[in-house]
Image (cartoon, rainbow, N blue to C red):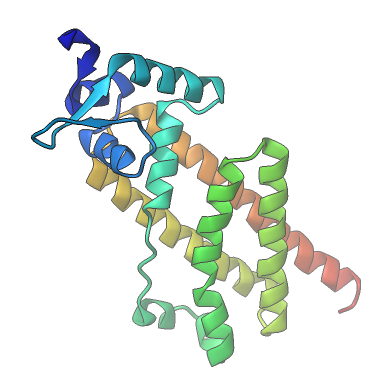
Length: 207
């Protein structure tokens, strides 16, 4: 009977993630967990196997689950001083600066949403964000190069924040790392392409 129960470290080994990730998933209700009288986390092997099978069937293996969990725990840390050093930021008034500071959060939310949809939906999400970045840039007097620089600034902050989360969680799976960068690059590359295409379309229309 005892063999049916797993410790937190046992589950971490089975899923190929760090114990802190299993602890986080348990506390968030993502992974089924039981508590002993002493308050220790214990897991039924049958529940863990079923949980893992269900997520694999949905196309979300361990690496993708780690990735999405890391995204949800990502926090943007952007100091005013860091923004002030950007040449495009100096061209903006206070209203525009506030709009751009919110861009990082919108980028993160868009990426999380895209990961939970199919490839076509993810592409549409990236294109919508690209159009939004381009429209905002033109509205506030930025040229296409400035708009691209602004987007790349927030993309790089996103990547830095995600790396910090991964390092703190001690993620060791090479597949998890490669999966993270592949998804981020595909999504953000499409945003950048859409920004440039939108500016070009405005230019052709003489606007």
